[in-house]
Structures are given as structure tokens and as C-alpha cells.
Image: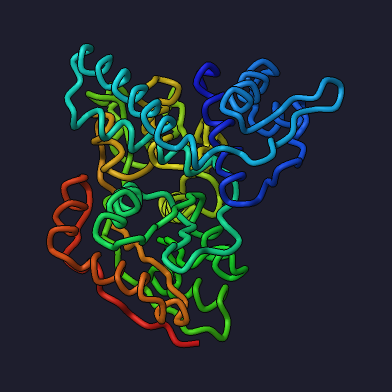
Length: 366
């Protein structure tokens, strides 16, 4: 990551902890070296982030003792000025991108993908959510990002807060009470079905709803023009081909591991198979930047980077919702909104989605 921009993310994360009440006036911020390990960055980057917090009145440095949250942090009083400053920086970026020849649609898509990456690496989701907030944990999906961006516009005060990881980690977060809904596309090979067998195993004794988000097209993501002429899974072992993979526990990885076994391809013979990233966007980005020759992921991510795509399978992505969450008006509002034809059209327009059944619900009994 470009470190001159990373300090913004570090200071923003600490600001959010102060706003959420996880850090209080007088609390000491983590030592600099702890933060360099946590964020995989230089000492100077963390110092820049702490200086940024101090300049906005949120932190104070005490020589030889560390940096502390300032008393009476002036966030509310400074909110209009902070918002104006943020808009100014956004306009500067927008002007730079437009001058470089990018369209407004391309810029919006790029910002969405950057936010996706942030949602992968951000701190753990809230332990407890306000009444109108829905905590999402689970598999990365651009459509979920779109829902999160637009839900508050149709549901007054409603928020969908996503944290992306993998399908399995999302269901575990649900079981541990650290999420309200999960996003999953785990394929069960024996039953040739998605999600229900895993929900029964990970949420034993609980009723849960599977709300259909969309069918998604999965396949090989390749450089434009497919210079290595990769057409099928068996081609992944060709000499000189370097692969980029998703992490274990993701629904994408579950399907790919099983598919390679089915066609008798030894994954240890696929160069780069152990190189793992946490989202479809990162897979496409690696291929676009040339650090990988091939990946496996969503067609919508390939389209976003204008890459080639070889279709291999269609999968079903569900929102997994425990039955007690269905009693919350904000959760029901999300489900009903998902079934709206305008929402279906917007998701389909991202590319690689079939939204005919979006918003349909199936109950899973214990």
C-alpha cells in the first residue's frame, strides 16, 4: 500500500474507536511499534497518523509517556469543518481522475472497490449494534457493498455495516453473536447445495432464514486478451503460469478445491496456489497489475478491471439471518428492499449476477 495514504486510514480507524466509545479521554493509544506491526507499515506512518489526530484535537502527546486520547474530544463541534475538508479532498481526487480521462462511473466503481478493501482489513465489527444498525460479516461481494452504500437512503436511520472475510468466518461470527447477518456461498459437495448444511452444523438448534441475494458467475480471471490461452482448470498447471488464490474458509476456495479434485488436478502443482487474498477485488487487482497470471473469482470483479473471464460455474449467495433477527424492523426492511425491482436491476448492472430470485426467503429448521 502507498504509505502516504495509509496514515489517513490509521487515524480514521482511531477516530471511529473514539466515536464508538471504545477509546475514552485519557486512554493511551497503542505504542508506535505495536501499530507498525498491526498495520504493516513504517514508524513514520504511525507518527504521521498520531500527529494528524493531535492536530484535530483528538490526541495529546506526552514526552516519554506516549500519546493519549484528549479530554472532551471536539468531534461534534468540528464536524462541519471536518466534513468540508473531506469534500475538498474528494473533489481534488475527482478532478485528478477526470483530468486523467476516467469517467465518473469508473471513478465511482474505483472508490467502491477501495472501500471493499478497507472492509476486509478494518477492525472487528461492533460487539453490539444500535437498533437501526445491521452488522454484516461474511464473504466479499460487490453487491453487498452496493447495498451498504444505498440502504440508509431508503431506510431512515438504517445502516448496513459490512466486514468482509470468508463465508465460514461469517457464520462463525453469527454463532458467536458478533454479527447480525452473514453472507455465505458455501457449496456442500455431497448434497450439491449451498449453505443450508453448513448453517445446520454451525448454528445447531437454531432456526435461520436463507435470503437469496443473487446467483453469481464464477470463473477464471485472466489478463486482457488471455495471452497464455488458459481455458480450463487443467491449464493452471502450465509452466510459467502464476496463480492468485482466495483464503481457506471462503466459499470460492471451497468450490475450487473440490473442483480441482474432481478433474484430478493436484493443487500443489499450481504455482502460486498458496498465495492468498481476502476478496475477489484483490484477485482481479493482482491479475491487472501483473503480479499473477490467473485467478479464480467473480465475473463482476473481472469486468471492473476490464479483464478476460472464463465462466466455470454459477453459485448461490445467501444472506444468513437467525430467526430472532427477523423480528427487527430494520432487518425486514432490508429483505423487502432487496426484492424491489429497482434494486435487482442495480445489482444486475454490476455484471455477473442473476437477480431473478433476489429477496426470496427459505427457512432452515434445526
